[in-house]
Image (cartoon, rainbow, N blue to C red; front, side, top):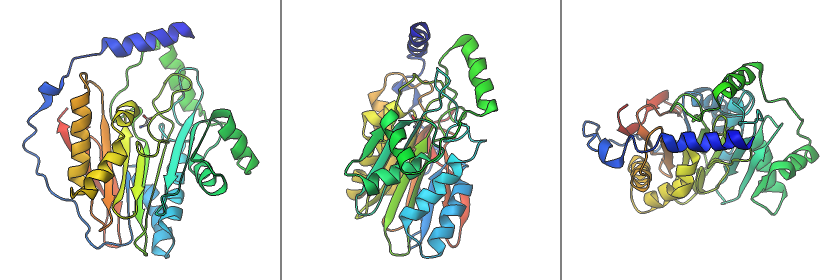
Length: 329
Ligand code: GLY
């Protein structure tokens, strides 16, 4: 075990400094447009292609006059229960010890929030996070305690390691090399933001985290202010990608604060991306994407490397949108 841990660390260091902040600049041919569905209400946006089907379920709640909170929970549950998705919930790629460990959080328009981290055996961690929010005085439960809480609340134990994920892990074990492939292998956390008919905002974020991470590693997704933040006066934001980089700048909270200070959602996401770039010497494989939705129903995303997209659903539109980016790779 400790040999494998050391190898992971060494491999991460060995990939250092191939792309530096100075090398990426000047992605001038992208327009700084505003994605906007001004006045659209209800509205739901979520990260990556998986967001399309998650949005459909969220929309069923929103269109029926349901709350944004119910919408985002039901929406991301779709992705959590999708065994084909290798980065979220059931079917998620395991850690280096072959254990699927999940992180999730949820936040509503009253600034109530709940989270679970390093949770095993439960298919829908976002719903456990909601129980933490609603039934306890706490914000986050982790590990064994989170599992015990979930079981006490009636959640069932499930084997989350699918045959396909197990095979991939066994293949990975042959070399045990930590080499994430950006936009593909392990960064498609689902983050979802919605505004309901009343104009109230909620968000949710859930992931199985980085494939083959160290056992016990927790990323940004369950951390309020990093993987997700909602302020009903301003808007909400969520993050996807390398969680460590998002945590270092309190990413989603920063995006919301930038919107509070007048930035459009896309501008706010870009500013947070630039901050991450500025704070990191080594950008190789460091993909991070932010998605934001403001109180007016304007939305936008931005990422470090080309490839991040997000799904939108309003009464008038249902589509996948390519986020703007800093580095064309
Ligand atoms: N953003 C997901 C993670 O780093 O775990």
